[in-house]
Every structure is written in structure tokens, then in C-alpha cells.
Length: 52
Image (cartoon, rainbow, N blue to C red; front, side, top):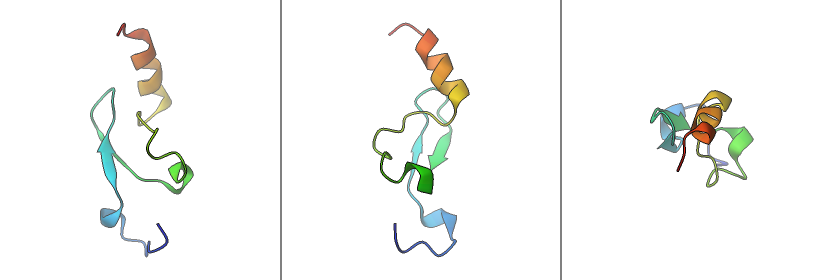
């Protein structure tokens, strides 16, 4: 992601596995973007309680 110039519409997005809201790539997730599934701790906690 070295070409970022402040235009967030060019960043990759994917839906949250729990709520379905779109998540936009963050610098914090640079190394783990493929493993990111949830938009927040709340969604992660909610999905842990649901039986698979």
C-alpha cells in the first residue's frame, strides 16, 4: 500500500463476518489483512457465542 495519497476510496474493503458492514483496510492490518474477519471487538465477541 505504498501508493496511498489520502483517498480512502481506493483502499480495499471487505464485509465483516458477523454484521456484514464493510471494513476498509487500515495500516494497523497491513500484515494481517487476509486474516481480519471482524470490524470490531463487539462483533468478534458476538460471533464467538454463536455455535457453528
